[in-house]
Length: 69
Image (tube, rainbow, N blue to C red; front, side, top):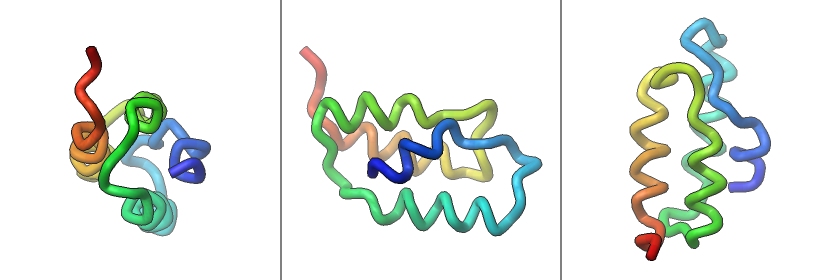
């Protein structure tokens, strides 16, 4: 997860297919459940657009974290 977040934010649609594949692999390697801290870190990873659908996957992973109180 740290590697994925370190590459934040997600770039725009003009990004190469190789970069998209690399970022998807990083995202898929992150744990499904997130702590509150991990969920907050993932929020910082959103970019200027939906990044070829990757933003939906990122949203799902954030939602697996605990509900903030």
